[in-house]
Length: 310
Image 1 (cartoon, rainbow, N blue to C red):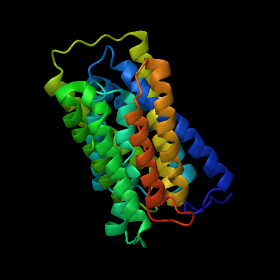
Image 2: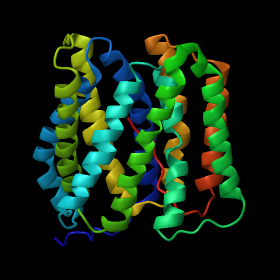
Image 3: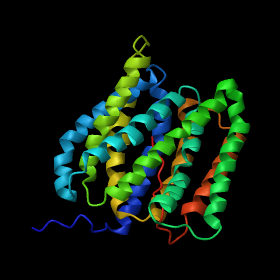
């Protein structure tokens, strides 16, 4: 039987189903990270997550690669994606969740689609036309400023600096995603994920050795369950689907994840972890998502690749 070409787009119903699944999984991971960090140091927890995910992906990658087709990704691309989208990005996310509620972290990370729209404009040749996307960028910026001026004030002098440092996480992920879109066409997303996960694990393990050598780590049932869920569902499954969709799906469909994930995260935070969601967080989320809609949500847009994660 002839194998289908790797460039053949999937059916639209399948794309929408997978987008819905990714939204639920990624929306839940923020609070699952927070639960695991109740007894585990952040870099130790992140290292365990990606180490397990890399091992599982190593077992699955050959079969997945045969099914999807595509060439092996260049080593430099896997190294950059692993260092940015996995290593640096998740180090900042896990560290931030020791200081801020998971819902607030998710809202701040939701600026990622806006950053990708800008990257697509300047680096991928998808020029943004009209005033609408630039208004969207402005609204997203105002949403972040509002969050810093309202709810973040309750976390003391470290609230705003933590939030500003966290914003580096979607920025470095934007770098990795841009390079995948520019240089990863026709490559195997399975092998790219596997190789990048190993690179990210090395960086996170280095952080754990440098900063958490004497930190207390209690592997409770909740901590173990958190690592398992984040490794299998939040990393192997979610990133496998995401990088596959990244090769085939227009930006306006992937951007749907950006609208659904914060809503899931802000709902689960209070229900599961007892986090307080202030009016400032809700208003900031609304402004950021409105900015995302204006920047990448046009019905025929094909410029940006947009999805939150965790």
